[in-house]
Length: 320
Image (cartoon, rainbow, N blue to C red; front, side):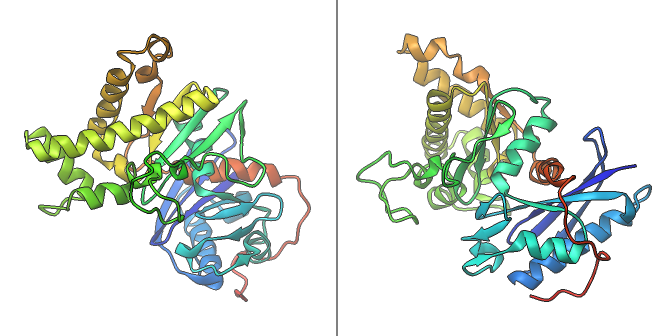
């Protein structure tokens, strides 16, 4: 059996999957992540080893490894910058480091881009133009157009969270004022509604809104109206067939999807043009907990299956 390994490395956890030739997940594992170049490489090695220890899987069956990371990625070299959540300072040649120590061809991809590829596979949307809208600490989209990732000239395609929408709004972490991310992200939601009863802020907000709390209803509607604006931006600029909601906030479940669809329907009511685009029907959501970024990273790993590269035993001592 020929396998691809996909690893989604975040600031606190790592999700890894093994895909067979058909793109089916045959093994999965979850680990705590470690920071810094040596920590990231060691975590990747541990993830591949853990996959190889699963029943029916052998380390020798892996042919390539794809890795999704937060930050800007130079796709040809696998160099990563602005990955502060991983403790990577400056630009780090992560692809080359992983290739040396894993002894396999490696491709490194931005985690949101990887999730877009994974969502296309998981939701059976291969071949369709789609945007994966990641609603986490920030807000960003991965674009798959014509079956391929659209990264843009400088890797900034899909960074819609930093489109200013309110000149009088709060200052964004990027330095601009009133960015969409300040209204439609996990951070924005946490600022608007505190966590209660052991639930996340998003879960607390939606539970209170469902129970009829007027303040919660207003906060939920502001949040989902802003998410609907993000969906409109993606459809009106790229005309993608589907916008897939993903990221940590989607742990709320179907209530989020229905609220965004309702917001899109309201916003389209007075515009024959928007109504003709059928925006509510073009929104989907991955199931909470889906490892779409890891799946997409594995699929991205196919790009280097035929590329020449060094070979060494998996688990060679890590040298930063």
